[in-house]
Length: 360
Image (cartoon, rainbow, N blue to C red; front, side):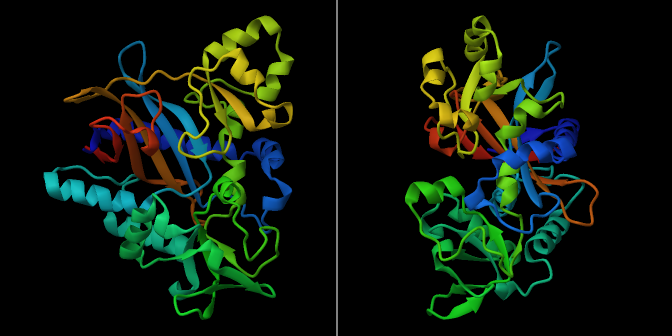
């Protein structure tokens, strides 16, 4: 089922998402986020802004009963730009609903054009690819298929990439090596590490390739920035290393009012919504800079279903082309459920799961 929201609430989220991403690349936050760039994953020729970013908001209510967006997470990484277009096209057609899934006044044609120019740049489409680890077995494979339908983007396995000098090559279905000039990267570093994937290139290599979304932004714009954001939608947050600066009497109080999260894991992996002092103390000292305590956000039960009232989390997906002074919110992704965590791996009850927004 689509989540139907007012144009006013959509505008509030759009503005907040733009402001948060702009704040994330302030000179001070660029200096701070330098600490997130691990040497073996740092890619040369970093862009001065994230081409793709996402900002996740919980739908909450204030004291006056008004719906208010509250920041949950952010990432300098692309999301389901193809699947959300396909899903919302099916919703509007099947249910004959008014409203638009697009933000910033875009229609389908403008959305397609912006996505096409952002991903392909000035390269020949045959030399551009979405790159992922074992894409045919990924849960996000429907998005790869939708992007092929929407803009003609091919998908290749990161295992099939190699180099010849500074040139990046990939092996096609016939075994032939072909040049790859521009990469729309969807491979997530912690998944590559967990799977022990050996790549045919190094992230550190100075290669003759363009990035449609430079990989360094995955680290720079992340939960790491939450303690440093001053936007009104941002929750109070602390890195575990900051607990050492506080009186011992305050630590238990802060932990009880917070959620314990790893900085970079996707889809809720490793999140503890009811941490104790023991959970925090169990994080090894040399790993504490990779964990955060984030203020608990109380979701509003705002979507009635036959099984009870659901909570909603809305992702604003943004594209920041070089020709724009600010990132452009383009489309949404919604998660709806009744449990403590949102995300595909937790949606096991009826009437919970992934969706999108129609704006009326």
